[in-house]
Image (cartoon, rainbow, N blue to C red; front, side, top):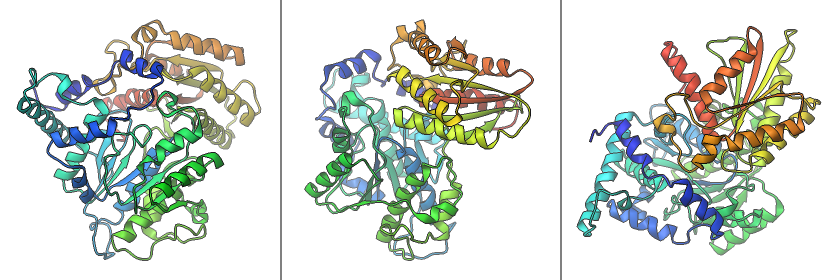
Length: 512
């Protein structure tokens, strides 16, 4: 078997949980697997580590429903300003490099494992992937497993990537690692850390209810599972019921929990991630970095408790230079300069509302042109209550734009990337119902739902993202166009793949 990047991605995809397994877990009502952490610790030992070994990575652990990826990226970007090649500031322990582990990815699975704010290369990914693959097979063979090469000797997709990321960071001697939880916190695969440097919880909302429960209290309980005794903990402002649970769990665990204010100094900072709500995420990042850098021996840092605290130049530079694709992202079409794409994932009612408000604010500020614009929606959400999300999107935009007809066209497509080639290997997902995808069941239901709230809009149901991009361009024709892409991050990643692969083919390169 080849041992290059493509082979690694193909092998990794065999570890995905298929739809029948995921659906059975959802319907069982059993929630998260309470044995998840002991199982994950066993996997850690099979690849030659103890959980306490990862303390040397000075890990920063981030949980939350909304904004945890943005907050993690802000943190990594700020800390990168203190690397020796960028800073002349002296401290007891200078971070040699910064690791960032996030999910999901948009175009390439290697985006999940970054060092100094760049995805590891294809060669490096393959190297560490097969190192873990081999260690697990050797461990199974030593234990007498009858078929050490089978997939049952490896953990599922996210657990495998978590093991691989930690091994990569250990091997590369990364000085600080920012780890974003996958789902929840208490039973999340990343929650094997023994003594992280700092923990934080970003904004909470209702999501992953089959595993985390359907109340803010239950979700807050899970997220607070990352708190560790004696380790500083921060939280974004939360609803009162969620705050109460977070504080209770912090007390139980011997943790001092600080609710982070939105820092006034951010009003004059041009954040690298757009959207007014990013100031909340940036504030959490500032507090986390101040705590972490203080632990490393740095001084002249922001006061996390003071909303009027000053921000050092390194913090400002990190906040301004951060990049995270598919979050409030605006790009001009390389084939059609009068067509603008507005791209932002939204997988909960709260996040879809934020995406709608951002889109409304941006197009309102750029609507001075006398040339009429064709406004188009591209939307999908395969595994959650898609129709509720679409209705919330419509209602928010209708209110913000003072029009019950926010789009001339609404396109609903699956997350399948290409018409003829199907999924790009990095974007394969088998945890959706294949029959529903093939029959466009969800997309037809979305079209019917949208027609019920805006009968004036022309609705389109398409099988792939590539076809949706092509249709949007056809609808705009020679005029101006504004396309909002929102919903599933898998959809967002697929749209970026189609748009950027065209740019790469034309010699314009990728923004990755």
